[in-house]
Image (cartoon, rainbow over all chains, first blue to last red; front, side, top):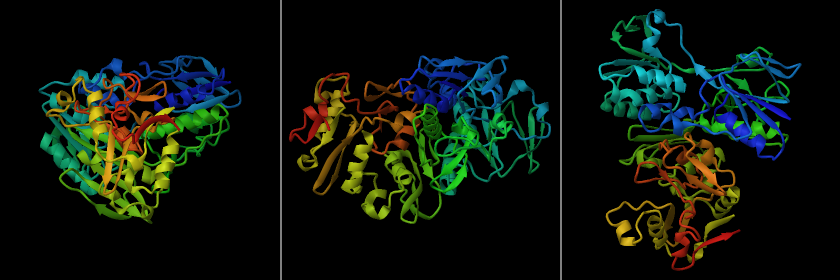
Length: 406
Length: 141
């Protein structure tokens, strides 16, 4: 059987591994539009900080996988079961995985074309990181549009290498998709103390060559512009063949799409978040890995489901580390102290979400498992939120998770 | 596979396994030299509460979620053992976020550390070898 995978990141890697884990003679072809060999994408900000190298960032696929670089899938012919690629070739598939990820969304700002391409960039790819790296200089003033993870990780990466970093966001708080209001303010104060400047609740009315006039009529001058407003799922290939999409390709718990023999995984998809019971894009590494693996197994003919997706993020800025998971709804239990924030959201006897920072992140995965397994909190020792100890679990749960490891 | 297990009823909560773990993963051969003035960060943890004590370390899961969540490819398997390439780790915290056992810790060098069953020093894990009451065992179950 022949499997074609479009895209070459986490979902593709885990799918390829799953397909080949079954010791079949199945053939796996990966099409990547990037010229660079596959790499661990979230490391691009660490690359700019000198915490990794391009060499160390390389992602290795199983040896038998045929990876075709610099080649974009342009069209899918579902009748002939072929992918028509930008190199003029047609790739036949028995099973197809669309793991095309997402792309930066750049709103049509007035005057954006006046800002030369030499001084503006997005921050999604290794190529973007190299470009931004080439622009950096101690005298340069940087303007970043967007205070999401991409905007803030790029800000962290370059802060000490440039003269100034200003970040603007239409929302009135930073990292709104990851943090609640209190933790957002907490992080903002920390980053301001490091030297970042935030301009919130504002957008750009008009750009001129090296300046932005904001919606409050103030102006910000810059030498480098980073566009990090948000991302959009790369669904067009799939939409053109009549596949069902929302804010991403709709998939079921088998990573199947609405079209036979076509699967989707990773940032390109929209799926069920069990902490909020809402269908949404969950654009994080573990989700891409789980969905990719699930797709790969099913493509190889072995049934597998992934049923407990929740949003979760681990990130850090300088020495402030944060881990978060789930949805911030229900009753707030705030046990924050001098060791960091410890904010838990509880509803119907279940943990729905949490935010932990600094040394309070230690062993935090124990809390994530409570959300993913929808554990009834009344079955646990009530001290579980004071410290994440396995001791708080009844013996049956301890035995259950011990078995799950095997 | 062989894993480290705790027979809870035999664990005295003496924490010696934590020190032996730290020693095994240090470059020293002497406990005093290894531990003096150091913040002891071991790869297994004793949980204590009143009369209950037990040690817990990496389960070396068959299907490890930490490897799936790792953003740098630092976590991987060597045979059946989940190991970490500290050169590749950037301490993003993703493995802390997903491990249901709380088995990974920040090391002194600011990247992650974890139990590797003492594979580099061969044979029986040092936590098991030094357990004075035979509470920790290394066996197939």
